[in-house]
Length: 175
Image 1 (spheres, helix red, strand yellow):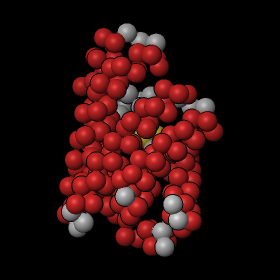
Image 2: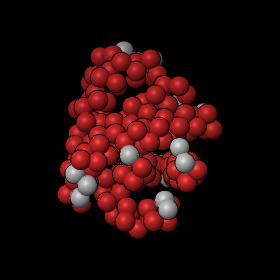
Image 3: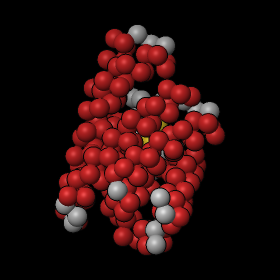
Image 4: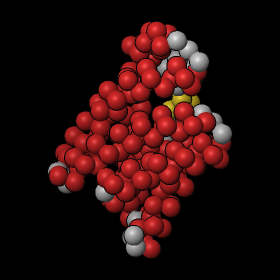
């Protein structure tokens, strides 16, 4: 990696960490334990500019550092964060690579949001029972009223913010 790319990755990961640490809130009243944070916006911006592989690396670093710095979620939280944000970022930026237009970015984020939502169904069924010490049946009952809507909203909000901020932020962050 060139030093400018390493610097860009570092800045974007730092912004993602700060955003996730300072801004997080529930978006569904039926699931106040599921918190949205805008950290994925900086990872999406970075992956659109630096590519899907770099985006996935940024997601991994961010998830690991967030768990180590805050202690929130522990290893299960870091894994879930990486799976969800990594899926959104990887799918969105991969589509943007092939269709490098505004329309391609929108389609990438729409499909990234759908992919993240679908991937998080089995991830929640497997990992959440370990993390929260709940039976798998209890987690399965939360899928339709809480987990699926949360992931859809998370993707839509992050995608909307990315769409609004991308052209404004990337020249400041990435030279």
